[in-house]
Image (tube, rainbow, N blue to C red; front, top):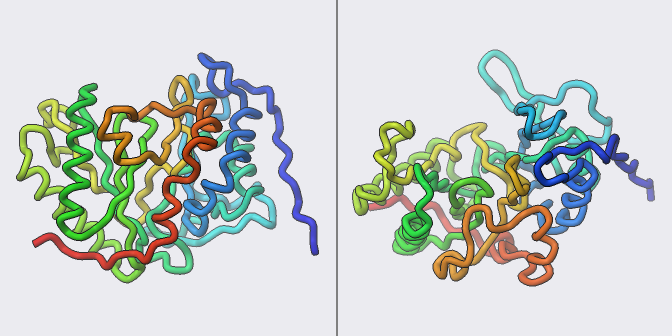
Length: 290
């Protein structure tokens, strides 16, 4: 059996999170540790790398196309764009995850579809984006999304965003296209806003939200992305976008930045992979709201 080429982390001492002293080596070690849980959520999905070569204090950039400077073994997929194609990296194994960490990629952002069925999403994502820090309202909004999806006979899973809100995910059979899934998500959001207009909004611009929570369904379009499960976010404390239970959210035990790079090992030892049942279940058929 051919031995796989290992990835060597260059400059592991480089500090990527200056306020916390978290280095590139520590980031790579975190991704190596969570790889068994994280890779099933990454495999086959085009990845956009959010890279910070000089650390998160100096600003970073998003990289979609990998056309040069990559190892021969790195799997990629060509996705059409206006006037050409984008060569997205695929993170299908441990060394690919280490390779993107070595590119100073703090956060891998992923599509809602996977190769070879690139045009048929296998998840639908609702991203709750609060305008202000009101944990009770955010918690109530997440539960409203869960409960309405349950009315539609759709089970849902939740994770912290590692930023301001929560990501709520519905697994789908790979049958509907992006337009249908995005249309479904928007109809769900419209119904939710109609039911609770004082708390929820579809206004993208914060100035127009009036302090309400934006039910963002834009993650469901072609080439749109969201932070992968177990991804570190480029914020103080290195918060992680971590799966959690509805019970934890409902009780107030979990907030958007509760889990961090340094606290996740203990968390995983305690709860394991909370999205394993989503990966294993028979995915429900997409149903449009009535």
